[in-house]
Length: 179
Image 1 (cartoon, rainbow, N blue to C red):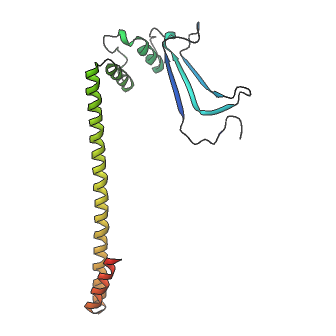
Image 2 (cartoon, rainbow, N blue to C red):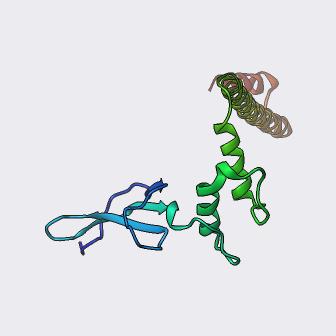
Image 3 (tube, helix red, strand yellow):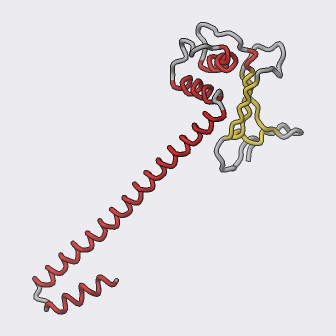
């Protein structure tokens, strides 16, 4: 196996550290990526484990043509000072980010109610999914049974057409129901 290759069978794992301080004083970069290497040989253990650090202090103001990453860093660094969501932060990612921030400001009573509501919603979704699966299983079983009944009827009609005595046909039908 070549350096950095592996046969580990696990999904990629990312650690994302959002820091309101800097390990890299004097640097202007915001994003730093690290991976696991063996200390003596510097052999890459795996590319499937990554450490990503966002140093928010290196991005205190918003540039006119900011990337999504820069907007995220700006929002995270300045969120507590925003009276409302700023213009240019309308897409789904920012909607989720700002909703999450609102949840973080809940009072203890609001948090308990929110968690109860979320648990209730998940329970209802799981109940519906279970009922749908059970309904599908029942429908499938009924369909199989219906198919067997139709097949028996077809065979009975064929045996009658061939002149097989009715008592022999009935014995065959009873035997097919048992097996």
